[in-house]
Image (cartoon, rainbow, N blue to C red; front, top):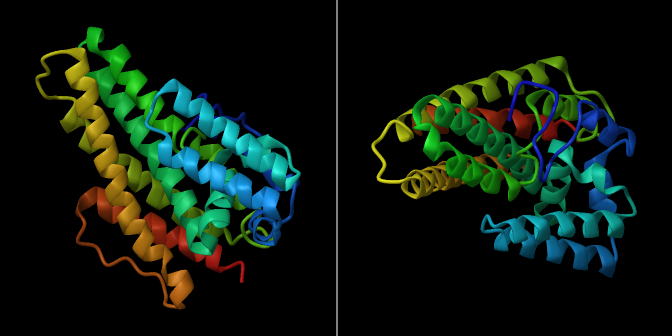
Length: 268
């Protein structure tokens, strides 16, 4: 996830107007997802869930995920580009897990993008030139199987600020500012982690790439566990608060999850 306005290729790819375009297609993307009924939508959701579960990082798997997103868009009667970006990640999460799923979709996309960009910068700075292409390929595969991970920070915040997740109402600027600050903390902590990962001695480019892939998966897994606990407060009616105790990266993810949860809860 970059600070520029152009996303990378793959799931979540879009230009600078991506968030605004997605918002313009429906006043409330989560409401539209909640109202979606019928066997065609159910089948498309099942197909998407299967594609996400089976996306192991190969080019074929990434294509399968793209096709599943296209199928869901067709079933919903919307343009496939409206499922791109961070709003699309929330819609996918909503269809598979309700409001907690929407929170998980947003956090997963933001964290996945942050991990990818942190690792990419660390590769450029720390790995020998001959090892970088394979390591970057591993990154592309990682981001390609996470809806919303390839969107830029600017597009992500634009999508959240559009009101597409809050009943068509523009959220409070303080809520967007809180997400922006916590996302910056996630990015900073992620960069520290991957500077450490890429500073080791590797026997080969394959060794470096596999080490990087394990680190990416491990950090994303920790982030999902933390965010899941926070997102569940939407179902239980409890307030969302960060308790800490997860290390720098985990604590930053927890605060991001809290801020996203509060944003989604404001739609009620």
